[in-house]
Length: 172
Image 1 (cartoon, rainbow, N blue to C red):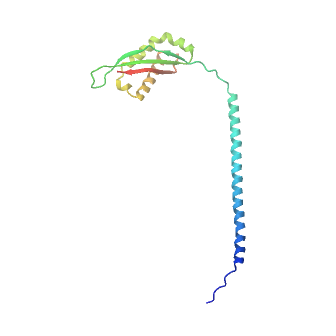
Image 2: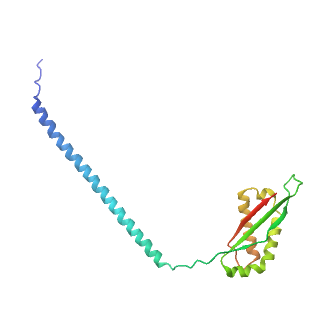
Image 3: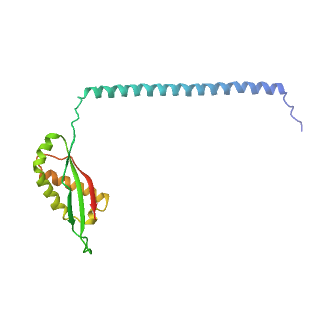
């Protein structure tokens, strides 16, 4: 069995050096390609962002500037009323309410003020039918606010209240 002769170290080094520059060139090409792609993507994003900002600016300048009208809050008299007892309870519970009506402007306030007795009546009639459990949660208060708003708007029609705001709600 004949042994194969070993290659000289010089021949081995020449082949190793020849393979190294090809892989380095390949790596440099890949890195340069990635850099070019990132630069192009960043430049494109910059241009698109600049165009979007210019477009938004032209839209904003095209719309007329509206004057903000002063919102008016009209206080309703403090109401204290007894609530319908829950099932199984014989002790009466009371509710004390202070609310304000949010109006669009002072013109609407002039229309609503003469109708305040009608508003208070509508609120009291509805509130007397409530149970303490109806006012015990935030969901109950939200429903109460929506129902009061509906009833107030019916009472003062054609004027309109924007919102009913609670100042105090005490159930005892």
